[in-house]
Length: 494
Image (cartoon, rainbow, N blue to C red):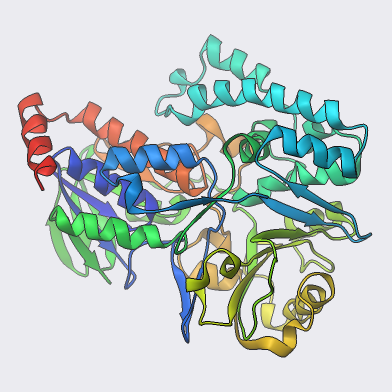
């Protein structure tokens, strides 16, 4: 059984690990010079920082899937962020989030007295909803709509209050606008508008407290080299800088790939990438369905000649009017005039990210996706640098050794749909059964993984999607028990 994986992002890499461990012959075709997709580094003059994802959520899911794929937890290190992060508001209020309910209640008493019981009720309700949502939706695929529209699932959607928006549900718990913002901005982690994203995404801020926020020592993208080494050890064929032109199809099956003009035959094919783009590889399977992209990001990567001691790893600097910022990102789709932004400062916990006595800073500003903005003329960089200096990093500009930027046009060049940073948007009609599934075509042997595929974006969730795809492949084309046992014994002896 030969399986091709088109795209070497985290979804494709986890698929390759799981399949190779189970005895399938796997080949990966990646257009770029390196594997990893969104998981990669910006490196310059001895500085190193994650280019994309920084916050590790759902650590147990990440560990369990890596372990199942053959990557032991002692091969990498997760550091718990305690505190998790601070939110700074324009009137000088700072609200800090902690990984335990007890710590958080004390912080709410300090900053938002009178809201303590509301927070406890929020956590209790979300715990029940998380258990429901994880079992009913995260751990299942919905290749057939009938598998979604069951009595139990409809009851689950009602219990999750999926008909509400994230914002509406948060407001039913918290009174203070700052506290509301603190528990609805997390839809931006997956590029969604908190005012329209369904309330099931309130499980993200709940998970921060329940499971913690973590940092991968060495950077999130360090997992890629670890996985790459393991795939090489197993003999998985990895083809870099290869352009997959299209799939070859006969009747209701794909027969292989055309890569740089050459034909390759395969029994199964997995497409890993932003689905609205990779679906174009499949002839006669194009539909008129359009997709809404997620929000984009304007990113700054900054090498500094000093270290800001005792600076939090993660911080959010909130703007004066968060609703206006969200309107500019998702409705009017214009350059935000006075946006909220996020900073990631890993040097305080991981000195290997910069030369001695120096540090590196990552800044993310949520912005619209699309091609309609000339970012070089936006002056957003200059405005954000001034705010950084005023609100958290004194004399920052005096200590800048180098600075790089990345905007939605760069993301689009890298293969992200319309420059959205998180796959298609997590709207109601692009969630659950309405999102592209792991078997998205009328082809019996073609599968898909990635942030635009159910169950959605975020590294552990994409890994879970890869697991679902592999389970579907095994269901469609299982290996015999003797073969699986023989392969397992051989791998365990390595």
